Length: 58
Image (cartoon, rainbow, N blue to C red; front, top):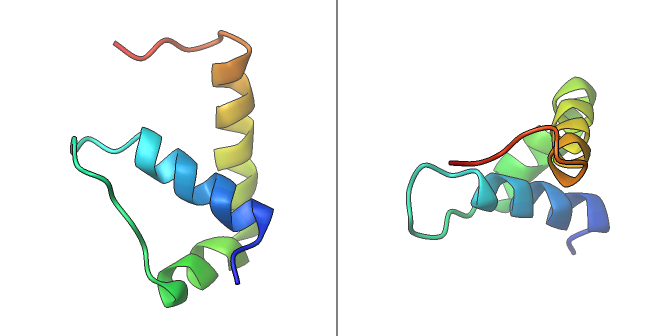
């Protein structure tokens, strides 16, 4: 079962993919990503920075 954190991480990975097609990770990969607290914190901080207009995707 996906948690909100997993869904947010998946959305970040999908939105920031260099490939135009959808990108998905399997459950094992998501568990590895979710268990890396520093990575998750950086991803969430990056999303907040983007929402605050600190970055612009061109």
